[in-house]
Image (cartoon, rainbow, N blue to C red; front, side):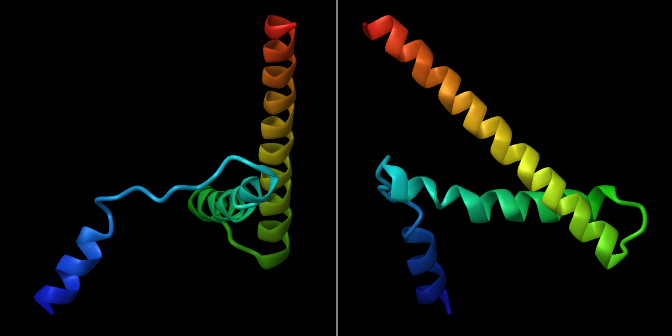
Length: 83
């Protein structure tokens, strides 16, 4: 048991190298879905499946739109500074 625990803890000493490309950016989608589910589970007073699903989809969409707008603005700023 101690050996297994120490191996698991040792795996956190080296960061995982995730490249910055289009494919690696797709890993943000499950992260945003989990954020939306956990946040709405905590914040909604009554959990009914239909309203819960609607709220999660709206929050997920707003997070994605905000991230896309932020990425476009940052790309435009860097393009203006470089050119």
